[in-house]
Length: 124
Image (cartoon, rainbow, N blue to C red; front, side, top):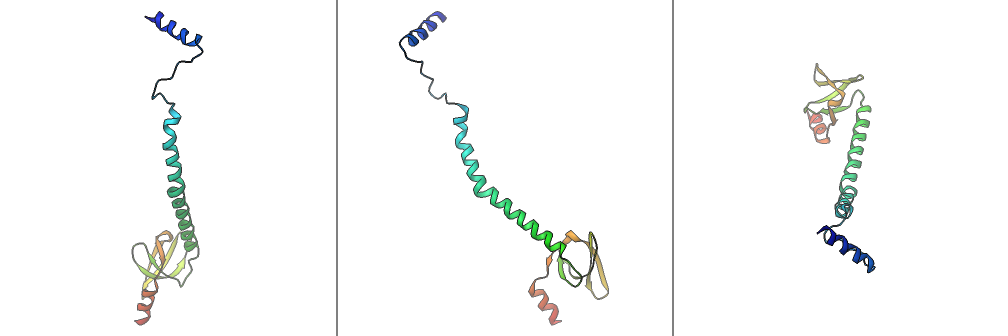
């Protein structure tokens, strides 16, 4: 049987024809190419802009934390409103009421107080 296959192969070579590849026997690269292209487009349209936005927000937060100074009115991530009394390396002292101060981590500062909170305090 093997001899018949070998003779058939030689016959094709003598005729100047090459044996035809089996249908569906594409290379691995051509099979993965559409998936690679889809991932590339997805990366360019979704992942990369999100990473840029995240880096920008992180940079703005670092600038906010580095710009803290006594007298700033801030809110902590726990929801405590206060006025900064002192700023140290890693901590900030907040005055949250008359004669009441707390010390919180600098990273616990969520941001400045919003305008509506300042108006309510001014009305008191």
